Image (cartoon, rainbow, N blue to C red; front, top):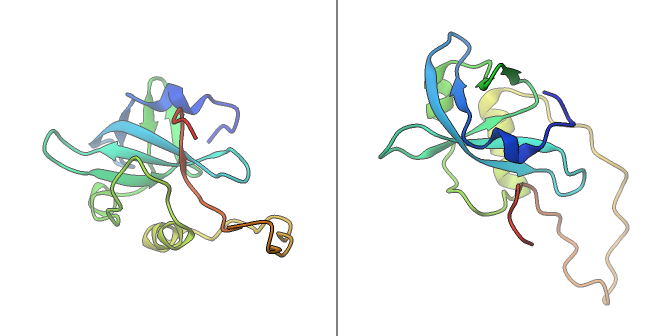
Amino acid sequence: MENDIDPRSLIGRKAFDRDGHKIGTVDEVYLDDATGVPEWAAVRTGIFSRDAFVPLAPSTLEEETLRIPFERSLIKDAPDFGVGRHLSPEQELQLYRHYGLALPEPGPPERPASLSDGDSARDFGRVAGQDD
């Protein structure tokens, strides 16, 4: 997927699986906190359904839609973590495994935390457009 797209422009787009079946509508976009690159989207799968997390890296934008290269059943069976919160590294790992995706290459090593650094845990999945 294009890295220079404004993640907020994805919200409200219709999402389709690899066979052209409608999955739902993009509800939220999650960014990697270290890079700011859009990594995941939460797609609302129906009026009374939940949001399903889908990976953006292998997905493509086609006209005004998001094409997700996985079957609808796999997407709808994705782990449910709720929306509006950060994805923990463990949750993100579960999503990578669910979709059978290779883990992204790690960035430069983080420097060890000192007593004055406070909590140095890295959160994944900041919601695009959400105030920090």
